[in-house]
Image (cartoon, rainbow, N blue to C red; front, side, top):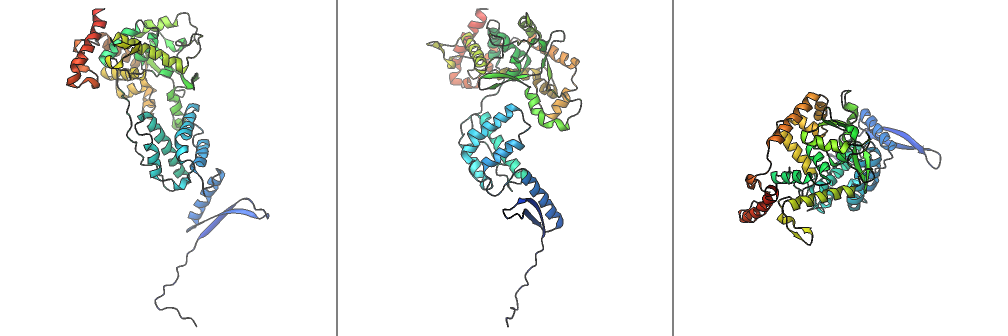
Length: 433
């Protein structure tokens, strides 16, 4: 007879509540069931509902790879985004994420894998690397929400050292050059529209004559051009794309189509009047020679040509017909988006409140969209009146501009050299005026 040890603890009795549901039939014809269990009836019921939900989505959590989850993620979690955003996520997966971790079981992905992935982009453009990180974080955050993984390895991802492109308004010198060149350059009207209204490049080339209200001095921004490869395609505004995901919580007063109204400053009125002459309501103001939507490469050429003229106006030196950028007071890194930054700065300078500035620029935070619905013609009229006074009272460039030199010439040792360049520019602009 086997005696129990004196100090042996009695085995603890575990009690589970089991539940199941049928997902089909086995080869022998018997039901194929998925079983779950919980310590309480409520826990078992919760696990049963979760198992049914995941089975309905086609999830097999055993050895699911990041690549397999990404397919389901795009089909389910990104089904409601715009076509342009859908292509954006597909591109980030194809070119950046899946080549590095696509074949790893998603449960085995650690933060170190993702940090190593991002570190490969060290020294790259901040905007590009930020978008890659955002796609990674959404991919794994939704996987954790779905129950595919228990812990989100992307929750604390930080950017590596990246090249942070300068985001600033035009300097007073650059502004004077832009306004001077725009008077004579063939792309001057396009640049002045960006400058005077602060709209995005795609919104500008989507403008038609019907969008201009000369009586109220307003422009309706209700569409935009996006680019697939090189071809320009008419689409909704960026504001509307970003609002799609929030439709369920919006009120009847919200601006559902993403349209916003922007006031036209006086200096832009004659420019737009000239552009609209002889055009039909649906004709584009800025277009290709055949009247169709401009291509991405053509738009790039427009700016390159205008920027070259700005360098020449600034008195830049040339070598074999190429601009020597280091001899110019016009920043070679300046893009059309700098004009939008300049517009935002001008709104601030004349005392326009933050919400109105954001609404005019087409930002899409909920508090901004709510504020925009309350904007009236009176608010828009007051805004453009303040801008007109500001523009009329300013002489953008003078000999005092030496105190507002670009940062890369702030070193006292190079100030003498810069003064020579600055003097050359003043001779071009003022002595020849």
